[in-house]
Length: 366
Ligand SMILES: Cc1ncc(COP(=O)(O)O)c(C=O)c1O
Image (cartoon, rainbow, N blue to C red):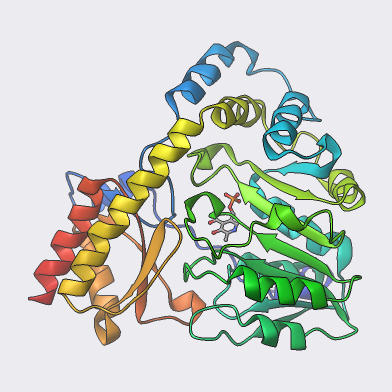
């Protein structure tokens, strides 16, 4: 039966596919009667969060009934100091996801174009769809963003270009040399959003740190997150750095109190504990090596990754492997939604979780 409100749903909104959430871990555990689950599906931090963060949150539980500070005053001070920027050059979001989408709402509408790469993080295309703009997906080169092709895809209708460095789900990087050419040639009215959600994990001399370009390019916004290396995914906190005027528009549009009190408290403590981040990076390096050794041994095709996850191919057996992993309690991310159906994306977990994945895969490959 047609409902009376259906005709009123904005056409760009009715085209959006509903989000299909995975089952809670406890449900899966019950369904398959499993003693343990290794969740390697969302690029979370296997070390959890810094003990200093946990303590800071415990100390503030008494404030739970109060609204958070809508300006995130102390967090903003701490972050600006840490990044060497002004406080009005940083905006905070309910995850960087919120900020990435807000940029589309500020700068694009029907008739406009938003450029991003094939295999890039899905929210870029979804953001274009939400605002009714045309998403222009530029074919990747190998698995990487093809920056010259992305530049060539910019037309007078282009309002935003989204790039991820490293990219999720492929884990690929583009180099400083490629980026320098790209950013210097983008027309200055086009907003460039450089998504550095996995910035902390990168150890590569050819990497371009987006913050180094903020002063020269007032059309550049760099986004980062506390969900990955800082281990605060459940609290939802991301930030964007850029020209004051751009940041002021983000602040005008974001929902009041979009960053909860515990995210603010946690982030201040997290920034001050850079040793935890260092530990995380080292842990990730070891976990990645653990996976790579096995992929090489089993002659599995994989995409070299600079993040805390890696895509590995099981060819035409991918679905079967994913099913077997699930039945044994290992949750990874199938890549069919990204047109990479032969790949599974596996996050780097604890060595026990990694071994859990390795054991299942090795037994299937025999
Ligand atoms: C490339 C990229 N950008 C942004 C995000 C969003 O992260 P959050 O909203 O947790 O900050 C993710 C999360 O997986 C990501 O992979």
